[in-house]
Length: 211
View 1 (cartoon, rainbow, N blue to C red):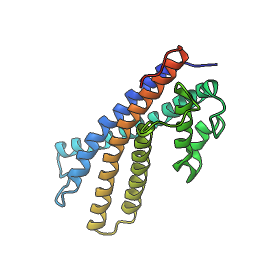
View 2: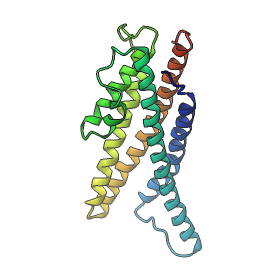
View 3: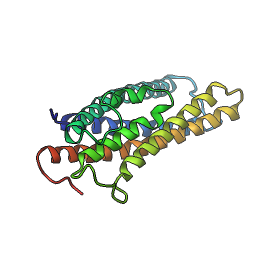
View 4: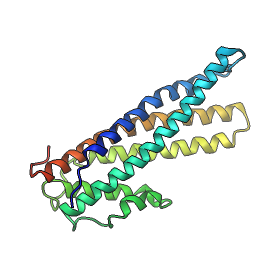
């Protein structure tokens, strides 16, 4: 049974845009902290600035977690639709649309493979060979997403082991790079979600998917 992914897709794109919006002030905070003489100081203004930075971090984490939940729900829904469209093109069962994100190491490739299968099942001819650049949006999103997670993980490792100011600054530069990569990944994720949802909507209504 087909399910309409449009509502979830709209909510997901709003959340992805919110992640980008929060990444901007996070980048400013990180750039400011790269100054060797940066400090909060004393007084109400300094306390307000520290509180604003803490609130930004907390809200950004909450938005990220909400995005993860909504994305996985949407991803599972479009995978179920893809099973109706073309059950023979999938390498893994529907459950892997959720489980693939939680398998250590394997999450580097399982969700991307599942997404590619969903894409192929949702196009006009599921059995046709991939056209030149057809999966470019998917690959760009996935590449930047994996890169951002690895760089942010690396910054956390560097930060936890930092013994000197130089070590802390290096960790901050890594964190800033991770935030920039996250912005690019979120932008391509919006394009991917919009395009795949449009393809499924068009196919469910008997129309030719947009090129």
